[in-house]
Length: 112
Length: 117
Image (cartoon, rainbow over all chains, first blue to last red; front, side, top):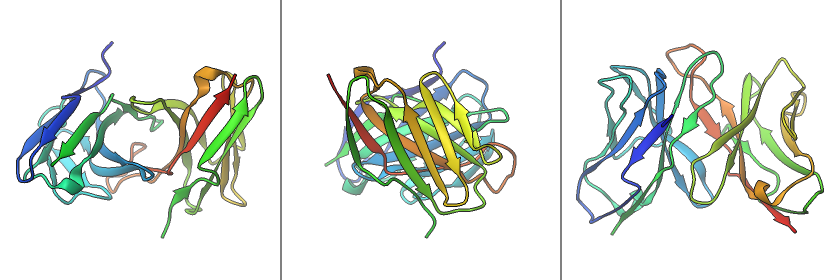
């Protein structure tokens, strides 16, 4: 039972480069979200999706794009990486009456 | 602004003692709360949740208490073990503009629990 899978686990980028963080879940969850975690800041919501084709902004969306073409996948795109985007990124998914979000293991991103 | 926060950033307890981790929230309309545990290098892991129509909920060695009058949550861990060492987050369900039970979680900054052998 894979749950929520994030790739890559680690990534180093140069300022201005673009990349996509991948997130896939095999639980048929309709809700998926992306968070970033910085030291002393807890987790902050970047973007979320309530189902295929429906996405919306969270608390800190600037510099990130998302799309949801399938129920399983919710990639996060950095169009032009900046040092301020150095962080640990977590993807989560949930479903049902209770909003228990299940998290992936995270992607550790450094932007130089 | 509205936020979910914690009273103590760090907590050190002796193995076998009980631990209490506190959390304050400011949105009186919040109706659902979750506690997560995050071990070093891993993603947050669900521990226990509680709805606002309850004051107390118990799980295996954990209890969550909700005091809506003062907008306060606590997580109690009985007979704390070394494996309980982690950062603990409370999260508040803010919903989404699309409605439904699924929605956006607002996390507090976390409390680091250290268990001394």
